[in-house]
Image (cartoon, rainbow, N blue to C red):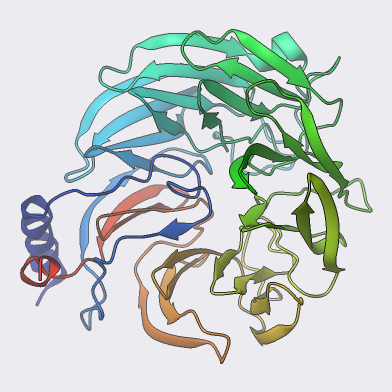
Length: 419
């Protein structure tokens, strides 16, 4: 069958399937890279999974997010940071919102937004590379409110622009801003943009905050440039803190902390290493830490049945094969297997399968097992230079390269999906 025929067939199947899940924020519904639907096909066609649609796009590292049939793309077109709402089934534009930007990358890299949007309760929240926070109406794209974090809090540019993906927890929009005068971490009212609380004098890291319930208590978990912070998301009260700072100034910490039961996994590159902490009676105790186990540069690891799967080592823009793909035992830090010279990639866990999207554009499916790396499908689906995190909704994978956004069908055939 031709690629064109496969694409047409995939689109017809797409429109006949029911929707049952969303991917509304960075790292998915539970902000840990886990996809819970059991609707992925067990194998791919010889030609690879079908591309349903694709679209030329602007600059940026912001990942796509999807809710209720609609996809939000945040990218830079010419001198404007642009939020586009697309029909997730066809790629057709539904609305667009944009505003001016003058962001220039000091190292000559991409000039687009870095942070992935969040869709919550009929609103879209975006945070641009120069610190413009916007709340938009999801149905129309009209601005509800905005805050200039660079101006209001003197948020620093960092090495590669402002990059925090907004966390919406209850009525709070929480951002790792790195502002002055106690505005390292700032919480806004999600309906009005009013500042509810601020705390910390730490500089911002490139790690997105997350939220977790540990031992019955809900925490906002934020990794700044200096430490892991556990906060009451309603009040900003500090509940726990753990120093976790790279030993060199020219560094970034980008992986999101993972809360797994009563454990928290931290990881960063540049000689920082990884650590597993246990939260017990409101206090942190170190289970293990090491520099040579699983040092995530930018991509967050995933967890499955007591094991972590992730990329260890530096993965600077461009293909650097020195990084390795690894499986590490969560409670001990023991490396069970590694695949050297793997390069940069993002990893999504779907059931017991790892969906690995490499920087080169190869999509790999492999069983998540500590026994060995066991890929069962591979396909060169995407163009080169894939850095942003993908979204996975109802068996359809949405991912962007430096200049294209694709929708790829990984789902079961319609007849078997309802069996």
